[in-house]
Length: 136
Image (tube, rainbow, N blue to C red; front, side, top):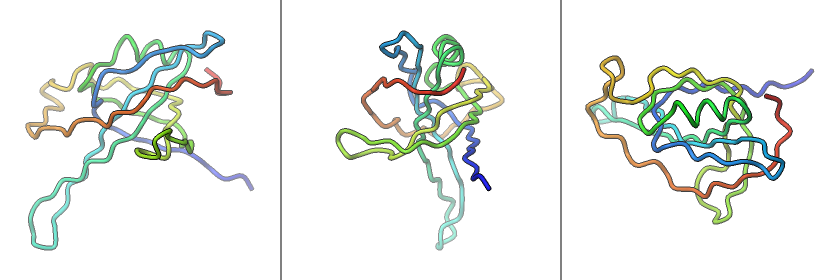
């Protein structure tokens, strides 16, 4: 029996997407999204946990993300997790290779998704373009 590798995330972009191309000319776009979880601490205080996820898109999806997304955009991402190696040994040890992106809002300041709490800054990472065998 085969295993399953599927992830669904919804969150806001922490910065503008970084676009590039592989040596063969295939478009690739990468960005970070924040997911927030709210819970009560042991002391009963409302606490927010923010997790950052690196998202990579390829081909036509990458082109659409480059044109449509900006810092604060609210997106639904479906894809699969891939383990990665970071040059400095810091940051996420995985990334999500997106198979589908839903643009919920182009910018994070619309009334439907307004969040008055400030978002922490997205993690900084080098944008490394490597060839991948993913289909468009």
